[in-house]
Image (cartoon, rainbow over all chains, first blue to last red; front, side, top):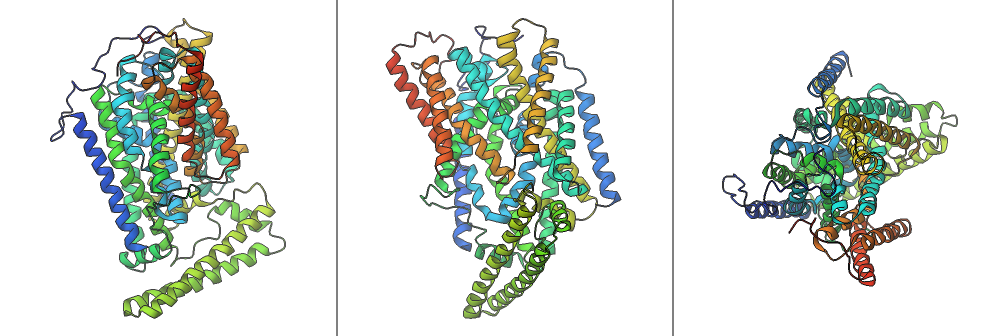
Length: 56
Length: 569
């Protein structure tokens, strides 16, 4: 068995992921990835808003 | 469906079954059975996460939602990208570090055994109910294709799902998902293109018609809490719903903790965060275009054709026949008015355009009223008939208007996706019951082989519970909304357990346990007494549980629980 209460296996990666690179072109840090995702969300909402206003 | 479609359908299903069974014929240990082989990359995780959430329900029910209510359902997903960022940044590293089988094991590490069991119990209750709803999806496909009664196809497809899941386990769930998703999306795009070629009007006119009939209102900033989908309910309620679903629901956690590294799991989640809104928009738009198509091609009075034909046979007083004739007349009048409206628009005659448009809107309302009367009459004849036929709209369109071969392939892909999603759900229910209840309470030291067998028995048990629920429940909502409503009633409290565990270290097990029970009772009371958008219950349940936890802990004093098991955040 790999896991049970009171028997926590050692961390295989840094918990906050800061030490791990994304290996993505142009988005080296996870913070950059999250900002990109947030930006794409804003873009989609804006486009949907334009659609709503244009045809209502 | 013709012979070619049946050959494609049966051939595809057999190929998937043989492929999945061959690749998963041996489970090396419990970890392998429950988590898969833990070597999968981000794209496979991303597709697996998307497919577990989407399933056949999304592809069958969401176009029906678009047909009936337009694009506003897309707001349901506005909180999801933000929630996935939080899951990737906070939840995921902790699960990977603790190397847990289920998310609720973490609650045991952080609080105590009773809180772990409460979290697992709430999951089993909510997901067990949802499993009873989602089992409709493959049954609806079979019912429409074969023309059989829905209860018969529920039993048939339910047994198929149970056998598939018990044999396959977690790896079988994700093994063929990427191929199915590729077929489904290819088929959906093909259906969209074919739909546009069949429209007797231009793409621009189709948008004009859809917009005038209020089908393109995608975003609303209304502050009316009774309105089901608004920007605010989607952003806040949807955020809590998604955070709980992706962060605390074992059926999802099981998908992404199987990544070969934290990077792969995170990218899999981010893949969903970027693509979910456009994907839902596209599927809803497909439903809106099906609506426009059926303004120029007469739709059936009731899309659940087997139920309609059965009702017509028992129409002794002829009311349904009369309503069907009235519906045909209303459709013909509406079609003529829409043509007049578009002709006036092309001629640049604003006054005639406005007049014809108003008449077309009135004709649509009249047509809808006749349809509603027919549904009421059907239910009066047979109270067992499910009055909501939105889930049948897209399947009916596919069967009636797509080319043969593609019909068989799409039906096979839908059915396989339904099997996979149900399988993931039942697998998560079985593994949670095994790990959090059976192993934890009844049999602490046993071999992996013993737990795998136990997990299969629990999977079978949950499959039968889902089957029984599907047979006896009468859904008022369409599938996609019903699943979200069940989740929203339970998810807020489950999420609060995890948020308190992560961020409020001074709150102990007893305080949060009591708070969760009171908060869940509060949500039940509010759900049955208020008429607000269901998305708000995610926020209400979560906020109530956190606040009560703090208050009760304040009354109890120090937690007395050392924090060494807590990951440092």
